[in-house]
Amino acid sequence: MNSKVKRIINILYSITGTYNPFIIAELLNIDVHYKNLGGHPLGHCSKILKETVIVLDSSLVDSPIRFFICAHELCHAIKHSDIASYYSLNELSKGKLEYEADIFAFELIKLLFSIELTEESITDEMANDYGINFIN
Image 1 (cartoon, helix red, strand yellow):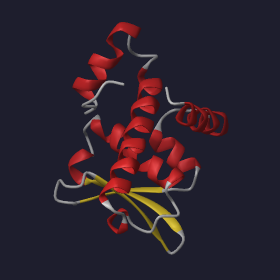
Image 2 (cartoon, helix red, strand yellow):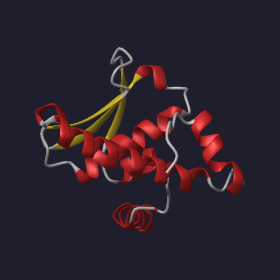
Image 3 (cartoon, one colour):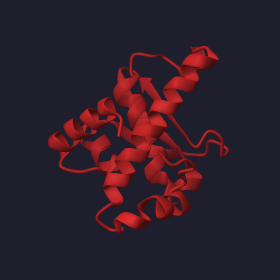
Image 4 (cartoon, rainbow, N blue to C red):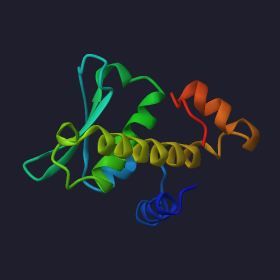
């Protein structure tokens, strides 16, 4: 695991006692809402009147992928909160921020579900059930 990501996740766990991105967001006073985003993007993180808000597509309400998408957006809320909008970035910067958020989400969700899954099945199970399309 990337040392910066590991440090951030460890700090979050020490503050919140969980790896669940929804509970972490709640404890950090980050609102999570479901809205119809038309399926793309599946999530978005914004600051509205100095309040950080994560919006997830309404298609994710009952989907286990919601954990990964919420964790991805949580990373943006924590690490990239000073950036007004990812649309204002150039493609190289946007790609780097998205990659960082994917790595963070992958590692957080891996820890969240590691109790339920055997060590051998974590990556296969996550790739199939939680929408993770890369293996670190």
